Each structure stands twice: as structure tokens, then as C-alpha cells.
Image 1 (tube, rainbow, N blue to C red):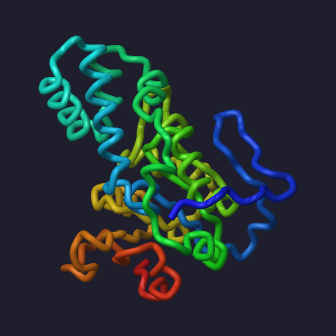
Image 2 (image 1 turned 120 degrees about the vertical axis):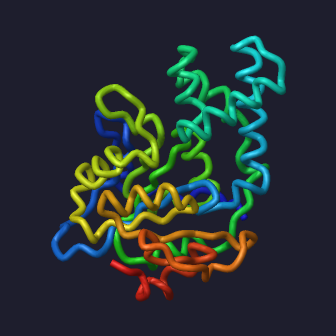
Image 3 (image 1 turned 135 degrees about the horizontal axis):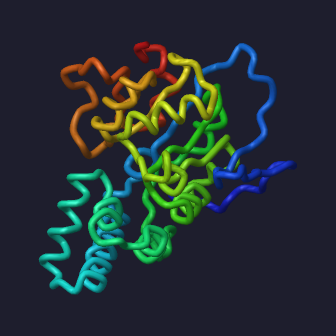
Length: 252
């Protein structure tokens, strides 16, 4: 499922002052949709093995740095994830943990050995009209390794990772409505042209309120894609590979 990273086109990625990797684009007249893609459990099956590796490293980190036993460390990890949407936010807020050190330590493993994804993502990104943007709560180093292994790096116009999701000096990852509105402004996307593709209904609910159209990726092992519709979900698919033929059904 993983692949070798493709060669970069001439005039490869540039980095703006905020550390976001941006590729030059041509004229933006008559723009098609801008597709914002989540990463884990959207573009690849992180639940297969990667999430277990990350969770184990996070629990070990809490155990070491807060001097608690493993059961308590796992409880704290889960509590902060449920309360703040990211374990890191709770550790920074309540324990003064260095977020960059935490992200580096907890995502330090070989992605390719654990990665499971469908074939054809490169072809999907090449044929889907519009700019493609990665919008993930994962750290930049890990996200870069995953998109390279998936062979989609050259198709991404920009990568926004948790390090870049800061407003007024405070981390605001998904599902922060203010961060999502900031993304629309940063990408200069009018409401109705931005589409967020995600496996998290909570993130899609916030995105819809911020002005995004929404696609819920249910996953092939997570039950049928056709469920009672929610007003904030514009389209349900089991796999992102279904988007080209299903996008005509995407509600505004």
C-alpha cells in the first residue's frame, strides 16, 4: 500500500513564514473546489496499526514525565484526548509539557512498516479537479512521512499540521471553529468552494458551521456508508476513492 515518493516538479514546495509547505498555483479565476483532506483514517487506515503505536508511545511519555504508573498514564492520555481533542493540549495546559518534544517522542517510528492504505490514491488526486490541501492534527514530520509513503506529496498544494494550528499563540486544532474559519481565510476560499474530507463527524460538524462543505469517510470496516443523514454531512463515502463518481451528490 505504501509507495516510493515521486519526484518533485520544478519549482518544488516553498515554506511560508508560518512553516506551512505551499506549492505555487496558477491563476485562481473560475476556481473549482478546494479539497481539504484529513490524514489518519481518511487517506489511510491508521486504526490498523499506527494508532496503537502512537497511543502506546503517548502512554509511555505520560508515565515517564508525570511519574505515574502505566494504568494512570493511559487514563490521563484518554481523558485529555476526550476533553481537548488532543492529548498534547491537556499536557501543555496542565503540566507544562513541551509540545514539540511530546510530538517528536510519540511519533518516532517507521511509518512505512505499519502503513495500510488502498491503491490508487495518486490517481485519485491527479484526476480530482481543484486544489488539494492536507489538514491534519498530526505533527508535520509524521504527516510528511505518510504522504510520501502514499505517493501523494506532489499533488498537495499545502500541508497544515498541528504545529501550524495556532491562533494568538494558542494551539487550536480541529474541531476548533475559529481555526477552520482561519483556514478559509488563509487559503482565500469563498464559502461553498471549500470541502473538508474527514472520518470525524465532530470535525465535520464544526467545519460545516465554519462554511465548509463536508464529506464523511466511514471506512470499509466501519459499517454501511448510507446511514440516516445529518444536516452537517454533505456526502458519505466508505473510501476517498469513491469521491470522483459520488461528488455530484455532494450537498452545498
